[in-house]
Image 1 (spheres, rainbow, N blue to C red):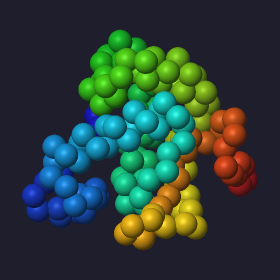
Image 2: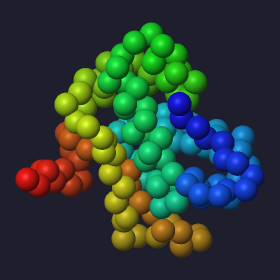
Image 3: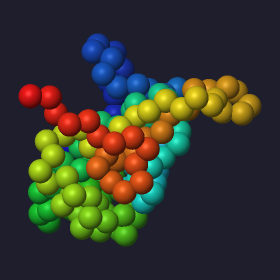
Length: 139
């Protein structure tokens, strides 16, 4: 389901390694996903935000189904029980009619103090207090 591992050869380069080994990268992305579900908005570096967005979208897709099996799959990634309950109780029904694109990555103007890393904000769309409203589909 949500594959956080990468192959050694990286033929298609579809997933960023983020300068970390597999176990550390998995733990970091799990923590970021849990924080994103908890706060529904997250400020992090741009490469982390871009790696996080598709994983969050896959979790929301799981939450739309709301079966016992899908809850078990979500528990593999999200380690806090309260956030899994929120994922299936609030976020899944919120995006029931939406067919994808549940997260938005926006670059912010300020850089991180210390190493001047580019920062981005990741947030769920169609929620109270979002930074920018979702665009209506054309056509």
